[in-house]
Image 1: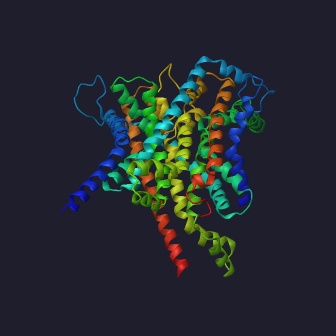
Image 2: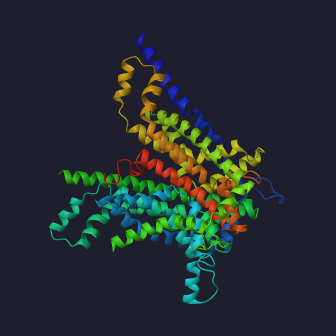
Length: 299
Length: 261
């Protein structure tokens, strides 16, 4: 009869300990983080000052959906983000194959060169593009020599934004595709080859289906990160070429259109969280694919 | 074909960093690459700027404090989440990791509005709280992974030999997490030291960080001293990457079990 309360109290103390360890961080997140997100929601439905009606309004959302300039910005964002995904796929898939399959001594160097930018100052690197693309640079002079026109180079064009975003987000694609290949057995390709498959059909019919979840989740991650990025668009695109993220930044800090900025931010939040959830979901399926592959090999 | 693309990717990934280092060494007035002559004059210019020195001091202090706090809080949270798994801890874990999916610009606007509502000004405390929100998810994810891969037998052995929970935490669990804690501390430092997307909403004139100063300078001032300041940010993050590679191994740090499985 003495054991039961002892167990209960130890269970209680375990629970108390676990929540005590989490308490400071949870408190911080509930106030600063969730509190802040609620503030954005409130801003987005807040009645603009000077308008004489109490309560909430959907006017800011109507403003966003009805505005032609915003429509153009959304289209430009989609276009540039898709181009960025394409750029990351073109360079990222070969790198992911190389660092997971090759036994070359260059492997470590390739991995370091392509993946270290994950941690290397993003804003510092943007100034590299400014130096390379701006007026007076080799690229600007080269473009002028080839096509004539003003010697302004690539700076402040959509091409500059796409190059900057691809450079920024390439590591995410490589990581995603490489981890989907982590359990890919080169033996499977060899088996297919020995059974008479051509290298191309091995790539398309054996490898692609296995790494497709990695490609998809990489594409979703790169797409959402490029739609929300505003530093690259601000510094390489400049005014007149703003993407959704930069437009939100301008609305809040420059134009003082708090309501419209907040409404746009809420819409972006919903879309990006949905895309990220989808990316995580395909990541989960990726593990299932792996398990299936492992089971198939086992039998 | 694949080889060509791999080489292209390596060049493309490293190009802007190399270019900005070379462009910062110019003796001329132009930002453009290639540099006109070589000199360190723009480093002298940027270090002679009291605003830059203030911003650098703010950035270093902020990143150091954020790193220490984020890693300590994440270590406690990770232990709770991995060792005392329950529905409540799973829910809290989801909340703590969610900023990985939420655009930082939205988090920034929210905190800006919240601080404005309570009349809080930009200072070390308000910036640190903001930076904790965006860095804890990274640290927590790393520490959960490192903790989940740990052998629990040692803890059971310690407990059966009469060690108190406190002794187990400090003498068994934390020493085994050392590399994870170090890796998390370095990454948090770099994330905080380099952040623009959130910080731009939290600074005020007179209290700013180096990346935000650069972001503002790009629009107004066009002298190569901006490249020199960029190189200082780049050097800090390259140092971090080298440290992680030497201490943990960069591929182990990125992939749980190495890229080739």
